[in-house]
Image 1 (spheres, rainbow, N blue to C red):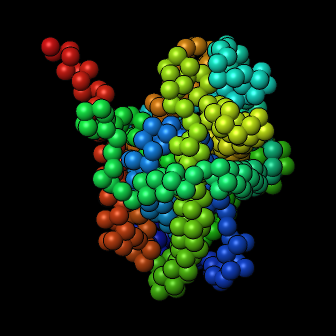
Image 2: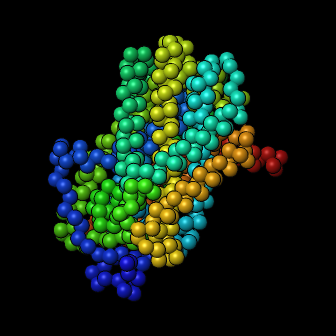
Image 3: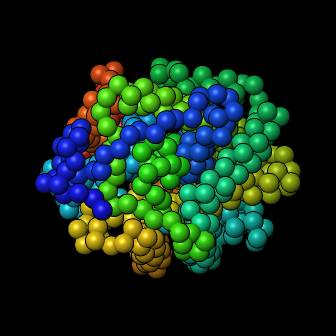
Amino acid sequence: MAKSPAEAPADLPVDPGCLPAWGVGDLPEPPKFSRKNWIRMIGPGLVLAGGSIGTGEWVMGPQAAARYQGAMLWAVLLSILAQVVLNTEVMRYTLCTGEPIMTGFMRCKPGPKFWIILYLAFDIGGWMPALAGLAAQIFVVLFQGLTPQDTINQETVRIVSAIVFVSCAALVLFGGKIYNTLQIVLGGKVISILAYLGFCCLFYVSYRTWGSLWSGLFDFTRYPVDAAGNANIDWSLISALAGFTGIGGLGNIMASNFVREKGWGMGGQVGAIPSAFGGHKLTLSHIGIICRSGPETARKFKAWFTHIRADQYVVWTIGSLLGMMLPCMLGAQYLDTSSLTTEDRWRWAAAMAQDFGAAKGEIFRFLTLICGLIIIVPGQFYLVDNIARRWADAFWSGSRRVRAMDPSRVKVIYYCIALAYTVAGLLVLLLFPKLSATQMMVILGNLANLTISMTIIQTMYVNVRFLPKETRPTLGKQIAMGLAATFFLTMFGLVVNQKLVPLFLKLFD
């Protein structure tokens, strides 16, 4: 049972803030860093890479690449670099405390109620079933054999969206420790799509397209122009691209949850969230166990962080970059952006596959549609877990009433939130019949930039405020975090300036 601040252990290294004090323990000895152990330790980066390859990579990325032919892709590179800095920092907190970073947020003043309400407000857009809607577009095109000239039935798409959404929600019921199910599903997703898209790009994308797109990651001087030679940038598209590249929004904080579920550092001493079937013996502590301060902690932490760097800078960064760039190359080569009209937004997720198939044959149309489903359907499953996991953890530690529950009952909270998310998604489909998954995606991508910038700033504060001094981020890492937050705030500000400010000014004309 967690101790209150008044009963805090004498060797507690820092003040616990607005939640009960952690227990105190020794940071476990990390596995020796070697090629054999590194491969065995792969986990959070693979799960995050699998979860991150989704809407941005399959719809927004190819569209931006087709329209701008590599210009503005530096937003992709900067987004990934900014996110990997955040990922390693949220993992730092869990490595030292066994708690997810959301619990660390609630230790900050004015207290957990304030932060739960605030982050729920920022996260509410993420409860829309955008991924299920995109998958439904592909299913309808695939099984009805629609060509780009055929009309797609919006009501059919909505019905299939609901079926996909509920099916993905049901998947989190099984697997013992839910994290294990995620690792299998999303790991298979990463391997299969990179293999197929890599083959297509290697043999069916021109060298010119390869050069144009990969050079665009580093060329900040290239930008699209109109017939008169003036800059013609749709910042809502570029901002959404940055927001959907990698993970974005509140999704990055899941890196800390996966450290706990993987049992790394102090995460191995607090438990995990069990599935409804097959995980009856798993429990989860309400409050974490912080590592003691001292030279031994410094030595062990440095070794543990080596594993985190390998997991994030190698597995997640490379997986996320390839997951974005391969669809972008295919889109730049084959996607006909003139077909992506507002009236036809109910089929955008199938557009690239249809255009590629029209150029190279029916077999590639079919395989690329299947590839889209492999990307999007597991992504929706991941999102169900993502929403349920972060808010289950928030209430598990932040609510006094929930903290009184037995540690084996965490799955009750998890599945209640998963059910609430499922009901909310179905209500969106029912109450907003004209809202396509494509529109949901643009809204979510732009809001993600505001949310992640706030997350970065608070993560930096939490790690400086609540961790033993030997494990806190260096000044250089804090500067990197500040730059990352600035990038995402800038993306959000450019959209506000281009899209919302003119509307606001018209009110005073």
